[in-house]
Length: 483
Ligand code: BGP
Image 1 (tube, rainbow, N blue to C red):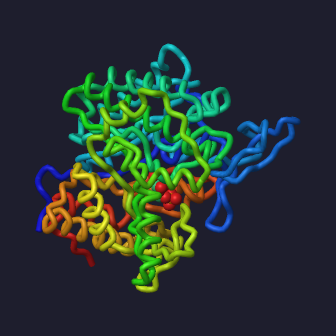
Image 2: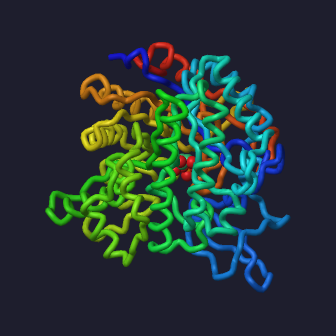
Image 3: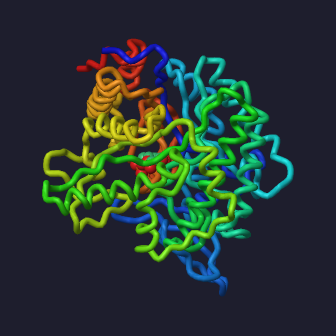
């Protein structure tokens, strides 16, 4: 079994985890610049200044105290500022992608590199030029760029001035960003993603809202849905043939037992996640969302034309991250870290259940539901890698994880005939973890010499998985073998 010749292979990154250069090239601050490092048992925090001028640390994804605003302090380490410095290494990094045979590279635009406050009339040329250089470098190597327009962040100014996505004004700012990107990159970029993991984002760092309660969250999300619709319209008008999707976090969800209550609980938990795709792919709020909002005491304020926008401009394709599955019963409180453990599955060192077959399950589930092309834009294993004295890094466990998942994706494509456009492995080069802010949770085919506090030479070194993935691409996924 072999993937179709058109199937794209590559890797994925996000600007605030990979790019760095946070105060270079005219870049403005983004909300993620205020997020500290953390660990699996120590949450990442946002550093803020309270109304009385004092300093406080607030847990990421929760509400900020009234009057608090993001503030940087010299004695705190913020992983996004340097990340692993793609900003100064992009040529070297893209050459490594090319060496592996990548045919696609998924990366995100840092909004405040293009519009430093988000509210200017004219874009920052240095920011546009940086991404144009990245795109041109990709194209030179026959690598298709796949661009996430907004990956879990917003310019600081928009967060502080308008409370981020709480405000409809931010829809206009986002549309302006899209217009600028499409004018500059049309003819060079076909695949776009309007947003990242919309079913997993929440709060100040990710949405620019000072509060993280349900009312604020879902109202802001409504504005994001509208912004995505505007993005689709604009892309189709300005770049005929282009495709706009959105990205969602899609762990498989299984009922813990065959007890009817557990089956229903699993369906219900799934809908909490699929709600976001339902609105954006089908073009309307689903029937069950009425009860979902009522239970949360949420009222979404809409303008008369909003529903028409959603109906008219749904996304063209559905993309998702797949790392794990989770199980639920009627009592489970499912959150960003998942639900209950599954006794049939091993877990990663960070406690995520490893479930390759779940990827085949999700590919089928999502295609059945939406009948739109799919793209697996994140999948990978976060692990501690050890460099031997001779400089080699044996990450056979990562090869195993990827081989098992690609095998299941192959079954979905070749046996189940699910149209899947491609696969971008997450963190193809080591970068900062989103959930913990650590560096030691490594995903890459390429090792980066940097520790959890940003110390190191940033030197890039190939791991064992590098050559393995090169072979996978060269054989269009036919040969997944390894020793
Ligand atoms: C997704 C995000 C990525 C990424 C990945 C791995 O949620 O879209 O930005 O980081 O998960 O997660 P982590 O870095 O927490 O291991």
